[in-house]
Image (cartoon, rainbow, N blue to C red; front, side, top):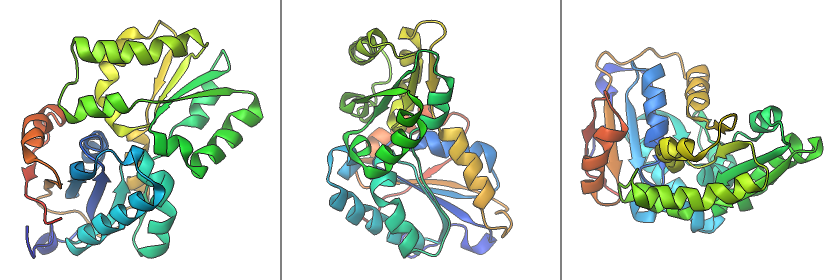
Length: 271
């Protein structure tokens, strides 16, 4: 892809998606389903995964580097498909780049509104939970209304997804170890606050009792992208490109499984 801008000959707005690894493919899937006429360039920064255990300064520097790269490829709208990067870098990105930028954030508001026990569990990364933006969300939408939030980092979930292990005994044990104490603590609504976690959703749902809700935000992000997308038309032959700063082997193995029915092309990253 050296020197090439995605979709440049065809016009339309190319959508860029950034994540620390494979997790953001769940967001790409929702965007492509809603906006199949727009090309998408996905960058999985697996060499730097996970973002969630890194400092805000490191996350910001890396996300700026990746954004510069995507803009050089003709991206006209950016989706930060990572909660940690959104928490720590979204405001910096919006003040730096003159394009629409859509971020992720844990769905605290709908979770708090739908809880019957008044206890909501937020499964997120360490960086997301520590961020000021998350604390503002928690205070405004939950704590001020008497809803108790239990925040739970799940680094093992990210590791499992990046290794391509989405089900089986190892996943079941990891999920049970996280979910059971939260259920014992009274949680009746669970928020998936990391895009990686969505790929373990079937296993998570299997251990939740009837009446418990599981909330994620991929579809809401896709609708937001649709709302702010510049009206420059669509590409005649929209394409999906996937790049990674890490090994392409795991993407070649997992991407078809994570993106059923989506045609895509993989290319080596220049970063």
